[in-house]
Amino acid sequence: MANVGTERVKRGMAEMQKGGVIMDVINGEQAKIAEAAGACAVMALERVPSDIRAAGGVARMADPTIIEEVMKSVSIPVMAKCRIGHIVEARVLESLGVDYLDESEVLTPADDKYHVDKSSFTVPFVCGARDLGEALRRISEGAAMIRTKGEPGTGNIIEAVKHQRMMQGQIRRIQAMSRDELSAEAKNLGAPYELLLQVHEMGKLPVVNFAAGGIATPADAALMMELGSDGVFVGSGVFKSENPEKFGRAIVQATTHYQDYALIAELSKGLGTAMKGIDLNTLREDERMASRGW
Amino acid sequence: MKIGIVAVQGAFREHNRMLRGLGAETVDVKRTSHLDGLDGLVLPGGESTSIGRLMREYGLIQPIRELVQKGLPMFGTCAGMIVMATEIAGGEEPHLAVMDVTVNRNSFGRQKDSFEANLHVPILGNPDFPAVFIRAPHIERIGESVETIAEYEGRIVGVRQGNCLAISFHPELTDDSRFHQYFLEHMVGVKNAS
Image (cartoon, rainbow over all chains, first blue to last red):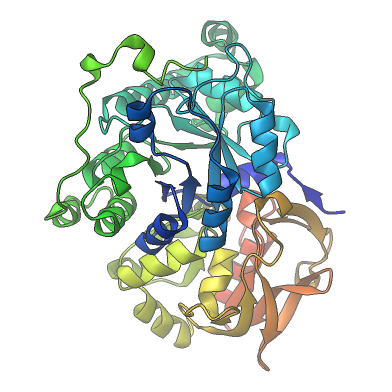
């Protein structure tokens, strides 16, 4: 009689996150700060992306101890990351009772050909995408939420902007197309025709679409909302800042009131230093996370 | 008729779509100035902790409580129900506290336990209502003037008290607009919402 893990239940869970901020945390204490700052969910990790970059080597699923500690500390939903294509990490995280999984390019991919078949899981998944084709491929595998990839752990917003603009621009073009053009476009984008048809009819992705990868200030969060994101993920930004609680609250408020510029000015005062950030021109191609996955 | 939808976080867009589909004029409520001239107010699903906290931060709690106490019809879904309750089990501080009920948060478990079920709701008649429960709360205790309108496996998941209506699940995620129609016709006083 009761159906768990249906597409509507999984996508619906993401709908409840809209207009909110999802923050990366590495322990229970940070999770509590994030919850107090108004985060609508937390992502439990062993290291935030900027530290993953600094540490180098292979980045894997977090120690379950950390994830359980975070789950015990807060009542908001807890998300966790598995490596691209790592079916077992995904199953392990699901067994822990995590509320959402991120099949994430922030971790080192486990499979260079196949992403996880997300439709076979009860727990919903979020996946990164750089453009509409990639987003629809992930949705066809069962992703219930999409986020831009951006360039994680850089504190540099340019890639997230590029990906969201690309996605929104493509959606507008798809909306204006005739049915026969859609068929050819499905081939160009490498996206299933049925999903493309839904985008054509609804004028948006069939799932919630967040921004991620490089958001470091309240103004960055508001910019991503202005560009059509449904909400934002903040990775290294909050807990790499001088005053995480104040910073977190400012990002949450700027996301809700993204067109209230006087408020954003107020929120941006005396926040201390944001994370230092990385000029993307200094990153080698193999240091870029956004190009992981297809 | 103008219906406000509290739009600080959560599924406010879906309520908007559904209410407009029924011919209502809608306004997103993010600040106190958006509360002027409303005939009804909807509190959507989302994260109740975030919604409660943000409503407090934006000074929306007191003005909304006063409006509802003066008779403004209000409809809350999921997190909205938690925010409307006078008591939250576990000792969390209540938010709007406009409905005399004790609510138990996430009482159906975590996301993996979220589910869909067809629910018989007498005030809506037949067919059963497609109820979507997402990390849903249920009502543990109801005050004397509160009427139970929906139950699932012995747990109260829908209540009405005068001008307040609250349910544990998400009609805004379905194509069934009967709850919104009920709210508009029987509580806001719209004739033939469709």
